Image 1 (tube, chains in turn green, orange):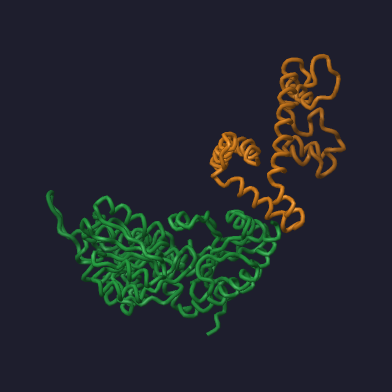
Image 2: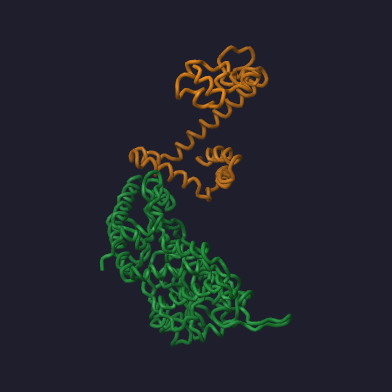
Length: 398
Length: 164
């Protein structure tokens, strides 16, 4: 199916905005995606029509909020193909989900957590904090299944890794990683922040134990995220943050914990955000994840080929088929911040530059950083051609 | 050395708006590091360089290329010009306060601050800024778009304009 990108772009009100009289070209979707009007309307509807508590109050507004939140949870269950609706926990982002798992698993002194060498700080740092409790950390080369197998020793209790690297878009072979980990009796936590919304995720087919993603990268509002976990595993986790709505009862000395998922959703939730996230997932599914993946691949291929012809250094695998919608690059002799700054000033092309929260990899490889293009379904071939033209001009500055 | 210019510009703007104070602090950090022979780590110099180059690139790629390649030299030139201007302005201000003329004692040469002394000493000018001001000329008031009618619009000005 050929996507009508112009029609899709009409759903994103931000495209009506001009900067210095010129349209914008947003290519930083790996950080935050743009929001369609359907999501904005859903958020506004909550504030305009039923701005109340969910899961607590039994008045008309309260019941409406509870219903809308349950509906959003159901949409996300279907999106991930989770077995049960209460395997879906609302968080404020992927980082919170990862911290929840690493802190709630009953890891003991001497246990090992295995991560890749290209993890976002959100995956890496919670493990580094665990070192204080005597938990060890081992690192395998991202995407290298042989190295993974070698590092997967009997003492590895948790494998925590990204599906797709936010640094360069490289795809990790998570099917094999999960399968090998389970053979070793290790649990697996997948950071799907860069794959949700770009690639089909089927948690039952993957047989993954835990998986997280952020709402703000899948057309949803900021401050929303999802933690998926197998129900029996979630039930065994220690509560991480507790408080309002996480207990059935409490005395001055004790409490009776709520069922899953409520026990992990402490305090008043971002109902508008959750409802908006549900709408965002509906929007994604209407377009079709496979269609999105195909469109992004075509754009990635166009840019990657042009960059290779121009002699621009691409980080990660050169084959766009082995990368998701991300092209991380450097122009020899030019600072990556300057590349991003010039693109922004000359033609409103918005890309990211820096170390993309993967400082550890850049430090280990003695690379200062990179400029990063990250695409989404609303990007067009014309935009990519303008980008290539501008990059040629920038290269000529040296 | 663009950070020194940025420090002066954003330092002044920062007095009026909190939005510029953070940039002024970044510029200060950058200047301090450069003075202590260290690399500027805030990235402000790169941001300013890319902003200027990006804008020039649309107008003239050749000028953009020249600016990009010689940015440090251009920055130094503007910094020196700025410092020299500040020094001369300071001397002028001192002379004006001490002798009433920015060129020094007993000087009859034109001074940019001289106009200020008229304003400070003329009560009429302090109060009447409309078309009834002694400085206001009829031809100014009668002509739409001229300074007195355009910029000093008010009850007095409008009335005078209509009359003229």
